[in-house]
Image (cartoon, rainbow, N blue to C red; front, side, top):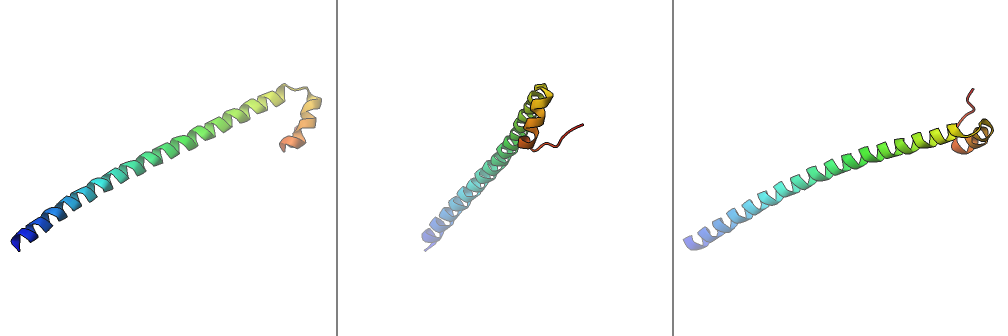
Length: 80
């Protein structure tokens, strides 16, 4: 009976060790995923800002009459 208990205790120790290792791996993966998500959102916001700036500069380079025609489509109000 002692052999069975010893085998069970050893198996339990191995299982606990593996469970703890897997938990650490999961925590690392979650941390990495959060870092990637943060980077992606940051880069996406920068990209959208860059596109918006370029579009604004392009609109400003158009003749005033074309700017006025484009404003309703871009959701812009008339600027004085």
